[in-house]
Length: 299
Ligand code: HSE
Image (cartoon, rainbow, N blue to C red):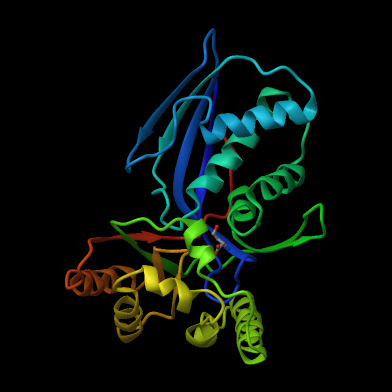
């Protein structure tokens, strides 16, 4: 029996559509036991839509791993302890994919390296920005190349002084729906807008010069379109900026929104935002999160 802990992730972080992602200190845990019968239990702290049948995402990923290495899969008991809210843009599906791959790797005597697991996770997920930070921790700049989707990445460790105040609404937004609304092309001005801000964002994070964050988290590739599905988003951005956030961005495909502040100010900022959120039509939960630097771990 062993336990796997996988962090939540926030993808895109404003301008880095499909290539920036950061791990957060909010975790799903999976207990894996060899058993005489197939059993999946889900003990979720948030409403769960995961299946307890063989259609379960973690189970499917474990099956795929065994098929890939050509071994027969034993009967397993899987117990999911989920804290990452589902369909909210915090990487809950990626956490399952990574948990399944780490579980299968451990069960089969570790035939794959961490890099190979990250590579396989990207091939399953289709884009790297949630799965790569779930594997490695930290802030990851990740690119998939070619038909084979080869993963190239760099891990950055954001300053421990930064805090990510996370606003999670009571409604869901599926990634598929949030991708369908995006245009098929962009103007040269919009492409330049995002390239320049994405570059400045990473330079700011690496140099710990946060004066540029308010400008560098801006985006024209996905947030303006997806905002149509997130009632209250514009108000949250406006209030967060007025209350001194160093940057505000949509987490992944939304609907969660994250404001960057400092550890020193995180509590007073969250208190002030709580009052603003109460004026909105939907219920928004606030979680004060920080960067996870470890990524998925076998405990
Ligand atoms: N980069 C992805 C998107 C993240 O924004 O659609 C969601 O998985």
